[in-house]
Length: 238
Image 1 (spheres, helix red, strand yellow):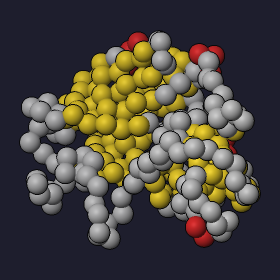
Image 2 (image 1 turned 135 degrees about the vertical axis):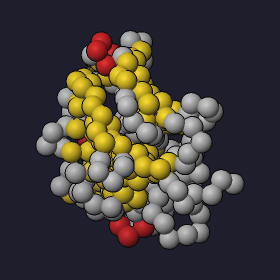
Image 3 (image 1 turned 180 degrees about the vertical axis):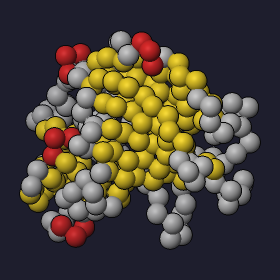
């Protein structure tokens, strides 16, 4: 089971200098890439998580975006330790964390990454379900054909939205285009698939005037992605 956590002034706020655990998106600059005396440079295929240990059940330390270049080393059990490109010292304790090896692709000698084709769009979104917990939390379950964690964005306004962006999607059921939800927080779910870039957007239309806390999990045995939404009554607007 994969667990991640986002918390924001709305849905996504970066908390600096405090002890509250948050997901930090690490930014890697486009520096000149050289193999160096240790490790190798690899490229992130699609948005992926950085783990504290070589396990999908370990603590989530951050994430990498598609196209990010990282230095990797200390391969074991199909996991790499990941470092910034400028890292000079080969010491595992200096790593940001660990990334599952299939999420990375080698960098070609000329500095170009391997191209992905439309034929690599293999993800199928099978079903989307809503569930109301006894504590008032509202959950959206997305049944998939394989492991995938979406990129999440938000919009504000009278009808705020939380948007899940799934990459490399081959198919999305027509019945999933609009789902009415009788929730107090989630009002409706809209889904679409762009056939040109194979990105599927699942949009949660939310009740306005509230702050939210979102928790995401992935259940590997069922290939089930879950997003739990709660009202954050303790948040203070800036």
